Image 1 (cartoon, helix red, strand yellow):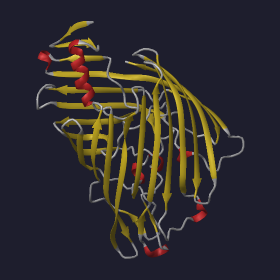
Image 2 (spheres, rainbow, N blue to C red):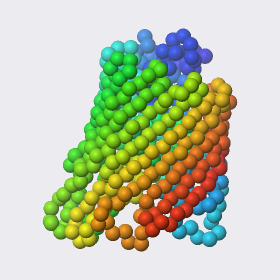
Image 3 (cartoon, rainbow, N blue to C red):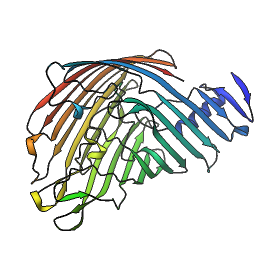
Image 4 (cartoon, helix red, strand yellow):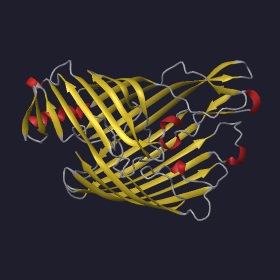
Length: 406
């Protein structure tokens, strides 16, 4: 269907002819992570093809049933949110939600020139861990040449290196963070790609009686080098992150800081034409804000040595391994195992022992693509959390979803 719209052309995107070029340009400007919106079903093509505007999104409904220690969130399976003091009678929970629905705008000007400019805005309808209904900005960024500026996933996030899940959270060990960024990325030849960025610092720490939060002075600095093969379908990325976390030591009467350093290896390995292996391993100190399961727990750094006012960064180790198999062109299956561990510094006083120690996440699913518009699936999840007092709780979830793209 083609109709005149002012000086532009409005069309339904196809996968042949000139529309294939439009689709490729919009795809290059779109975010790359495992639950990102797909390509738009509609586009506006400017006069003489000097700009493309894609408008799309999806309506997604899900239904789930928890057994064990239910997680009070209908779209996120967060193992750190497993209740450790659940009251008797609350061992199961039925939930429904359409809050993971999405709306986005993908704009590219001068698409076939060196001065190509891209803009991407993404809106969601879920607010907070409990996924209450609302209207919130998920991403808003500009791209020009090799730069990305705005609000999107951190450069320390290799978001496409994870198998599909109905769960909107994904593996608990995944380093996944939306942030305000100035990132630079460039490809060299057919195989190599590098990136470095300056990103908004956001410290989430637990402070003592002799320490408190202050304004941050230094941006977070992520960087990576990546080797790809099989026309970009496979890659191995070595990433690093450097942070300087400021706090005030009231005992000494002056500011102090902790330097946080992390390294990560991630990627996708096409084992066959139908089977992909997804993996990530991360190790570092002061990086809890970047690890999905640890966000908001105050574990970037903690007080040590009582009333000295001194703080130290928390050591974090996390990894996951996933497999995704295309049973047919429309039906796929995947399974992912993920684990996170925290190691507190010497001198940390854990009152009551109720600080997060480690957690495990497992998911397996079947996803059926009925048509380019309609997708459905079923999924089983199991998760556990253990605290420093060795109290251990777990949860099971069975869920299904229906998604209509537009």
